[in-house]
Length: 220
Image (tube, rainbow, N blue to C red; front, top):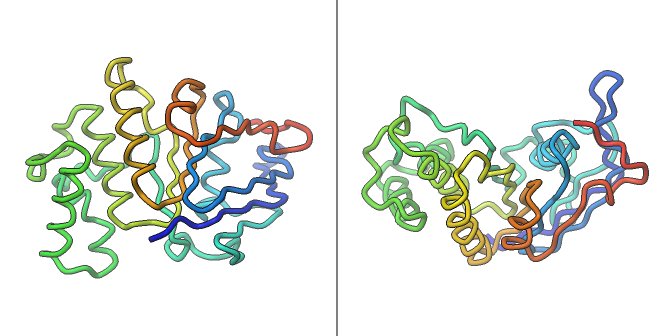
């Protein structure tokens, strides 16, 4: 699916009295890869969840390809998300983890397993399908989480610090692999990170969260 343009206008989120995002504006072109930078606790992850529909903003709009999606459920937005903690299913095999979204969409068993095996190969895990995800290394689990998101061919991919917790050598290897995968797809991608070097290596453009809001008041 071709990458979708994403536009945020006046996004505001507050939890109780804590203002997390204050009047955030952002435009991402179709098939552009951007990195959203900011210190830990600054509101980057919350902004991704607003785009995905996991968190409802207290104000503002989320527009995807010219359509107001602010009140649209997550599963109807054409958005995929890779979480920092992977969120894999420990009771399912690696193959079934990758194929899970296709199963929920009603894709038949043979087709979804074939597509999942193809994606495991694309992320360097050919032959890993029968393994339990609890047996995977940290880097392997990151690859499975990425494959599970990308297999659905989302028009927008959101990545919440997907390379956190890896040793430096593995991190640097996966930076290169992730950059190649994202730029080789048609998806629009927004990756959250606090690592400037990582952002520069992966993204077409880097954006500071504080530059997107008038008062720099993000706190989460």
